[in-house]
Image 1 (tube, one colour):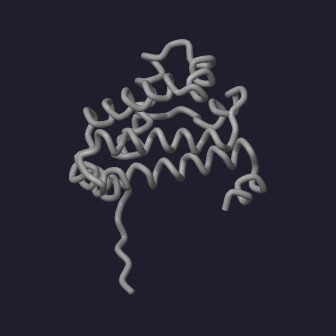
Image 2: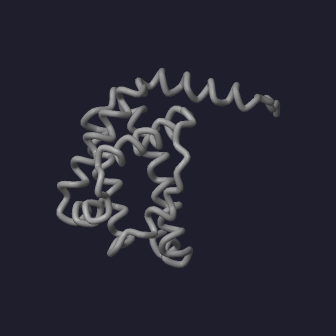
Length: 146
């Protein structure tokens, strides 16, 4: 087995090249975030949760675009703390994460340039959802879903 040692910059470039190959750029991230969060805000369950917490949607969407650009393209523009922000949400349940993931998947199916791009984002979204659920509800609740 051969291991390739790469610098952080080489890894970043590889991620960025792969994202570009998949059609992921700032314009796509912007469309994804705008479309997805319009759906979240309109959702009968998720809308009241998020709308009750977020006062300035344009500023929040800008932060989310930086977050997803950092997740998908290793852009390095996001420096927030998503776990404490989500811990503040009132009334959220584990089941709400499935709704969130479903809306995210549907949005990607509607706008992504291909199935590989959908899979790329969903892999990351599932990891993020799992991490947030672990922080919010603990390990035993996460294991009961397996």
